[in-house]
Length: 204
Image (cartoon, rainbow, N blue to C red):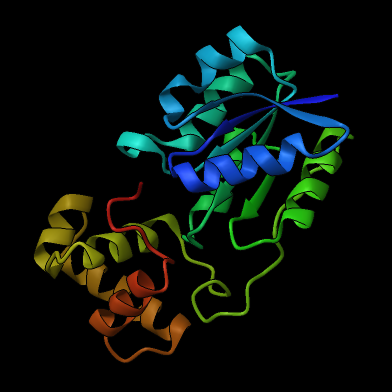
């Protein structure tokens, strides 16, 4: 029997996940919480086999941070990260945190259950490349930082100051971003990125 902790702040989705999991002969919900800050303590208390964790939970607590804490303290607990947003840094961050698998919330329940079972069998499951101009691009950490600051409405001089770069360097990096994506304006690009969920401006 696979015991699962659900970390999800949306009540309807949390209940739907619990109902789906409890309907399986080989799974049951060990506990639920809307807040990733509580995830590690609940893992210690409930001893789940697997934690299913949303990236952004109640109070904007970070599920990826919680995943890293659990992996460090309780390496035997499997971690599946889930999100509704295709934010360009989430998958890499989840990998760095040691999460075993990653699923998007628009996946059907059968896929999620397969990922859970596969993860428990020792496999790692991450989405393949997404067919989009942003998802297909490969940005450096500096470029991502610039994109996020542009999405926050920062001007070039403010970006330079925040990242300890010269304005000339920022201008050059912006040119590289536009070259990779085919946009003719960093503002147009930032609006597209936020509208399609590829950038969460605050990085949460």
